[in-house]
Image 1 (tube, rainbow, N blue to C red):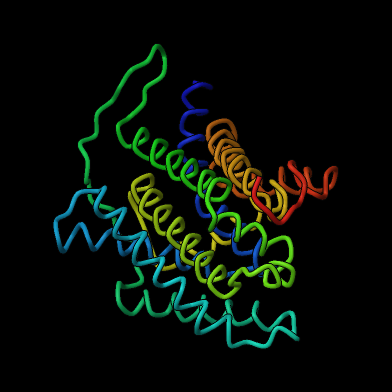
Image 2: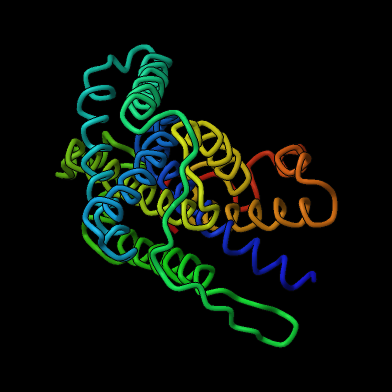
Length: 289
């Protein structure tokens, strides 16, 4: 029973990690809490859903298509609602992203409807018994895809010139600019990569719960913020591990306590960790590992 719940928690937590990493990337480079990131995640889920429904594509094409579309959406949000806002007032960009949250949520409600919709069965569900544990094909897909994307991101941030530019901009935008780094280009890249990860997470969460709605982004934005605090502000590895921890805590609380306590228990663990370790589990830092 315990091992089964741990596997369920890792599956859920890996999807949480993807969106939290995007949150962390944007905060690391711009020191901005991008609250509309949760709505980009929500739009990614709907984009994946309608790619499947309208074009009859498989889940892999839907996943890739959703990542591309949400990357474009994230870049548009940066160009329209973040870049033109004066940085002299620190709350102004934050409030702008809150406005984008409301706009995207209302747009999704108008376009897709306000009710929950089921994500179609895009892959054959097969159960794989391993001892006393059963792993489904959907769980394997979600976990494998999440880990693959996290590995690709890790290599990108730490092994490429563009990744080095992102880390330099996160350390000091002014110094990086003096060294020849195109800061505006780095910001666009950061929003694109972070939003693509959110789009992938939207499709994976839709597969996990078989239900998506225009209001799922707000809850996910709060959880991503909690994960970022849990792992350490701006720490990519912390966001990966923090997402896995939150997923496991949620699943265990539902299994051994009650589903109504899921969020309270998960956020309570976060509060306790921050009381005893305010910098997060891995410490706050604004660059790649």
